[in-house]
Length: 398
Ligand SMILES: *Cc1c(COP(=O)(O)O)cnc(C)c1O
Image (cartoon, rainbow, N blue to C red):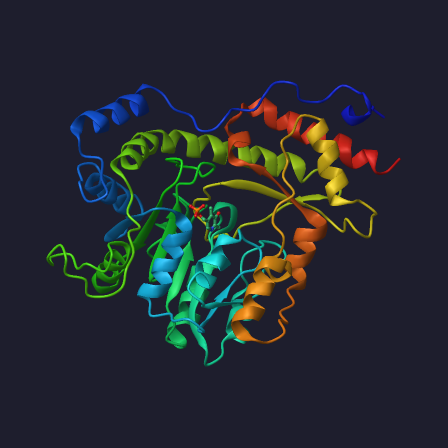
């Protein structure tokens, strides 16, 4: 048995993984051009319309509204869908906190529908079971870049007359049945935060195919103005949630790199799927067969029955990090996140009870992931990741 690196052995992986973001002359020139144009946005627009066009075309959507970030993108989509303070919004618990805080920002109440064991995506049966007369929207998350079951979720949303919002922050380029996600529901929202697969440091985008919803979302992000109205004509209370030209410039350049990066991530993820599933006690997180393209913002895997086998996830990830693999422990299940629970209790005045055993087990005991930049390394590095995981899991069996 090889000695673990944290105990003084040789680490499996010694060279650094690709840093993120990846940039070059295109980005530099684009930003200088913005400076010199004197049009710096968000109402002084030169590149933003081009970004709206490119991004909506890329996702087969009719309308795109740029925003300051992905969190506020969800908030705006909820508000434009008619969600009010006190209304309930169904969403998965295994996601970034922003999926829930975007609703709590204006007093809407998250209700968590547990995820499926194999995919960690929101279970449509649990969504249907969670619907009450207070439910005013469903937010689904395309976790890690794997599409949630949009066919069934859309059907449920239609049956109950509820808007369906896709939190596609991790899913730029993801497809469901050969169609890009983002405008399959009523709204889709994206994030360009610094770790995301396409980034401008911060930023977000809202997509929809519905002109009226697009106009409402635009108005909310533009201090309540209407598209053809006067400057000081405010038809509702909205906020300044606009993106700048600097962000648009960087994003247009980053989109030029996206396709090649996506193919690399997908190829390396395939290699990891093949190799790490050979390790006894390790299983990659699955995606539906209808997911015709997975954007791989994260590569997720599970230590199966970790608790029963006496493997502590935190200790596992500490040992794997020691081997040179930048593994992450992942989310706290939002139904167990005290910041979220306290806020919900404050808003509703009731004790909070919402158990999500599958999400809790994934978060607390079993699921780990690798960030997208790891998937931009070389093919042979994927083999080393397998060796490192193998070495660490065997270290628990001594
Ligand atoms: C990143 C992320 C967000 C929030 O986006 P920001 O741009 O950071 O506000 C929301 N939901 C999910 C699933 C995310 O990964």
